[in-house]
Length: 111
Length: 114
Image 1 (tube, rainbow over the protein chains, first blue to last red):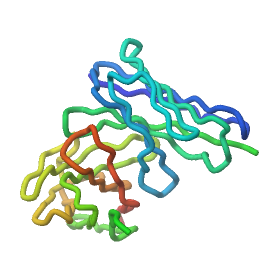
Image 2: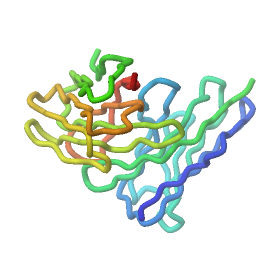
Image 3: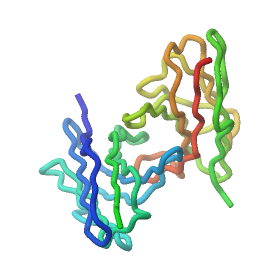
């Protein structure tokens, strides 16, 4: 069956360091992969989309990689700040019209 | 400002009662989605609609119903057939009809059973 795995353990890092979150998938051949941020009690907010033919995408302090051979995406936040503390969700296209979301990884950035 | 509005923010349901969750968007998006989120779980797709008067079941449609009579509105009814309705419900919309576009989410409705 199709599965998306994100680190179930919360990630705690110190302010200024680079946070790296992992999204692994099995039994998928996604054409697109998306990353979202979710704060407690709020809806997810879109961050980045990467296509299968793109190896890397950047937006300000954010960087996403997509390795279709390893079936893995890495999400990096450089120079992390306490305001980056949130849950980060990856999502893959289930078909052409809908997304499947992972359970998310909680990130805590401490001063 | 354009966006998605979900109401109410909190909703309580009595046993055997149907309740309807509202979702309105003024982004002029074609596609709309309903997800359910349980603690520590990912988002699970209930229903989605790519165009007015058309919608498809997602992974967990049993016990739920939707309508799409207007482009900007996609209400979700949680029926009495849904035996475990307590959850956080999220509505989203997307320009176009594909998974190659970002989804815009509302701030959710938290449903609880009395």
